[in-house]
Amino acid sequence: MNAKRKLVVVITQGLDDERSSVAWSIANGGIKSGLDVSVFLASSAVDWVRKGAANRPHLNPEDPPMMELIRNVIDSGCSIGVCPPCAKVRGYTEEDLIDGVTLVGSGAIHERVKEGAAVLTF
Image 1 (tube, one colour):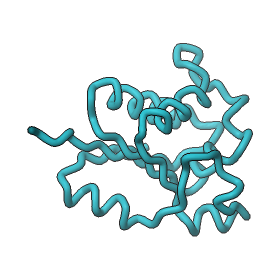
Image 2 (cartoon, rainbow, N blue to C red):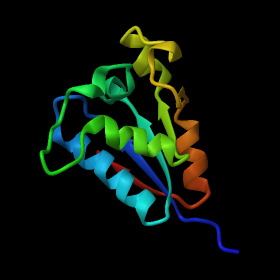
Image 3 (cartoon, rainbow, N blue to C red):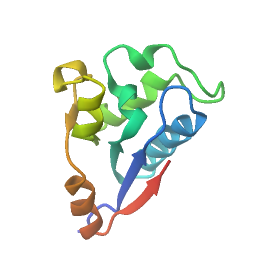
Image 4 (cartoon, one colour):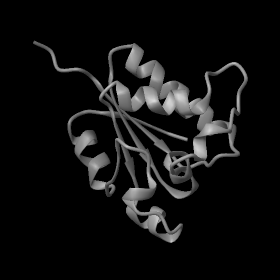
């Protein structure tokens, strides 16, 4: 049996940058394509998974609402990791994040790369 191909999507842009919408759309497209997707949030992108923050932004009217894109990643069993120092500098703890999101260091990305993951950064 072949293992699923892996994709890591690194997002560094926050609530006001359309590149984030593109990144979440690509992550969802990867899931639909059968890839094992992981999302890693750094810098201002950690705001996407703060409870309530993604309910309002809708950066691209051609895309589903942002929270729907994020929720689909979680509901598909894919991981969303948040850079611990990036969360800490914003005063966030894991309790501030939506369910299904974890604080993980960059080692999580490195492990996926060692397993052959492709990495896209936005």
